[in-house]
Image 1: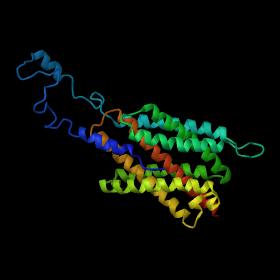
Image 2: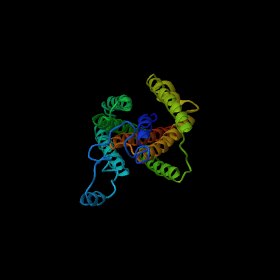
Image 3: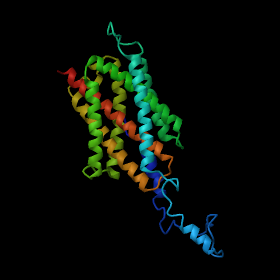
Image 4: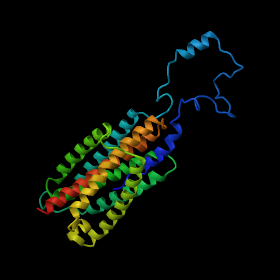
Length: 293
């Protein structure tokens, strides 16, 4: 429900690797010793040593410990699988009674635990000084629990909205990637700053709306239940969609900048978080549209 501050860290820290292999960084800097294992000016190498060195070929990103697109894809699929499995389990636990149709008493507790727990962990992950893989996995579990519970509730009240939200999310994901790849959607430093401020404001608004909905405002919709509910929801969809473009661009910059391999976890975490955010926005939008019919 907000942008991914983890990518701000990646952009800042990977910039120091952007000059990898440049003349300024290709050898030892002035005043610094040469790395161990490499001959200095006073050393010589035999023909056999030279042949062996040149026969090793060029080091790949994997050899140098830099992040690759394969790293990000595999981590993203892994985190996405955790979210899906947990969401399925949450769906089964919170499903309405087959006979009476009543909602499970566990629906709301799991919903709230997953929502606020994943929100808290997202900030912990973003501002942690190191890449904390257990926190990222725990965040995926909580997101899955949240998705399962909220999807059960919305599908019980507005039948069919979950399927529509899933299709819209996947279609938008593919469309945003294509639009970013061909350059139709641009991501600049200015757009990042503007989006960051808007996303934090939207997060505050969303938290206020949660409180308003529990107090009964807008027939349980909170501020979304007002005359501008659809407009606000469309804004949420637009912001979550652009968050994906920022994710794609940040991942691309991290890979080209030679970011350390450990950042593949953060990149994957941010990408899946944006995907979940987009799904929630579509779910709310379709539910509001169904409610107004």
